[in-house]
Image: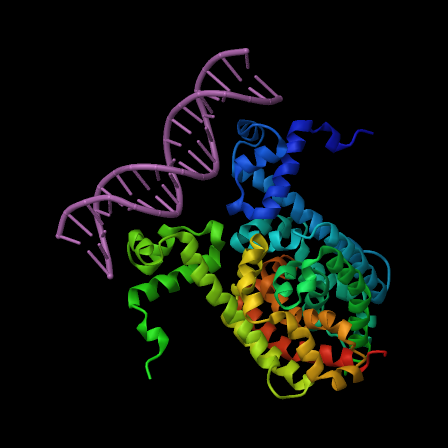
Amino acid sequence: MVKKKELIGQTQSKIFDAATEVFEEKGYAGARMQGIADRAGINKALLHYYFRTKDQLFMAVFHVLLKKMFDKILSIFMEEATFKEKLRRFLDENIDFLIKNPKLPLFLLNEISHNPALAEGLKEKLQYGQIRDLIYDRHSKELKGYGIKKSDMPQLMITIMGMSVFPVAARDMMAIMMPQMNDTRKFNAFMQERKEFAAGFVMTALKNRKK
Amino acid sequence: MVKKKELIGQTQSKIFDAATEVFEEKGYAGARMQGIADRAGINKALLHYYFRTKDQLFMAVFHVLLKKMFDKILSIFMEEATFKEKLRRFLDENIDFLIKNPKLPLFLLNEISHNPALAEGLKEKLQYGQIRDLIYDRHSKELKGYGIKKSDMPQLMITIMGMSVFPVAARDMMAIMMPQMNDTRKFNAFMQERKEFAAGFVMTALKNRKK
DNA sequence: GTCTATAGAAGGATAGAC
DNA sequence: GTCTATCCTTCTATAGAC
C-alpha cells in the first residue's frame, strides 16, 4: 500500500517541513518567506509555485500541527480504561510528545489567540464540543466517587492539561526564577519527573477530595 | 508629593498606553507603528520623536509589563504568613489580576521565547534565581510536613503558577473542546470558581501526599 | 511638539528564461 | 519544476514646514 505522504513530491515536502520549523519558531507574523526558502534550500519563487501565498502555506502547516496536538490529547481519552489509568497514560504520552515538540503549544496558543477563526474548522468538523460530556459519561461512577460533578469537568480537565502543557509553554519565563530550566537536559529530566509528580498530585487530590 | 507618572508628558503617556495595547494584542512582529499611532490618536512621526525606533518603544513597554507580572507573583510570597495562607492569597490575587490582564501571560511567554535575552535584565537585577531557596527556607518546616523536599520546589511552584496562568493563556485553545469558554462572562465565572478549586486541589494533594 | 510628505528598506508576489 | 530578476506594497524612519 502506498502511503499518502509518499505521493507528495519531495520538494513540496521539503518546503512544508521548513515552513513548519520557521512558523513554529517565529509565528506567522515573524516568519519570512525568504527564511523558509533558505531553510528548505530552494528559491523563494518555488514557495509561491507550490503554495501560492504565505497565508496558504501557513494554513497548511497550521492545520497539520493543530490536528497533531489534538489527536495526541484526545486519542488516549477515547480508549477503554479507568479514568485513573487514562490520567497516567495521558501524562506519560503527552509529556513525551511535548519533549519532542516543545515549541508546539506556545505556537498554537498564540496563533489561535491572534486569530480565533483558525480553530473553527477543527471545532465543527470533529464535534469536539461534546468531549467534556463524553469523558464524564464514560467515567461518571469513578468521578462521582471522587466528588467530581459534571460541572467540575472543565476545572479538572484544564488542571490536567496544564500540568503537562504549562511547563513547556512557560519554560523560558519560569527560567527567570529557576535558571536550571535553561539547561535542556535538566529541563527534560524535570519533565520526566513530572509524569510521576503530576499523576500522584492529581490522584491524591481526587481521592481525598471532600464531597 | 509629585508622582513620577505625572512628570511624563501626556502625549508620551498616550503613546505608551496605545503601544501597550497593540503590542499585547499582536506581539512585536505583528504590531505596526501606524496602528499604535492610530490608537493613540496622533501622527506616526510622533512615535519616533518620543521613542526613536519600534524596538525602543517595544522595550519600554515590555519591561513595564514583565515587571508588572513578576511583582504581582512575587510580592505575595515575600510576606509573613504560612505557606497555606500565601497559596490562597496568591490564587485570589493572581486570578483577579489575570482577569484584568488576560492577554499579558501569552504576550510575555511569546516574546521571551522568541527572544530570551529580553528576560536577562530582570533575571540579574532582582536576583530572582534565589527565589526557590528563599521560599523553601521560609516554609521548610511546613513544606517538609507535606513531604516536599527542596528539590520538589520547581514541580510545586510550576504547578501552582500553572493553576492560575494556564487557563488564561490557553483559553482560546481550550474553547475548542469547551465552547462555553468563548463567553467572557462565563470564563470569568470559571476563573472566580478556580480560586477555590485550585486552592482546595493543591492543599488536598499536599496534605495527603505520601512522604 | 506636532504635522505632512517622502525617503529607503524589507517583504510578498509574479514574469519569464531555461 | 526551478531559477533570476523585478515589481509593488507595506512598513520603519527621517526631513522639514509650522
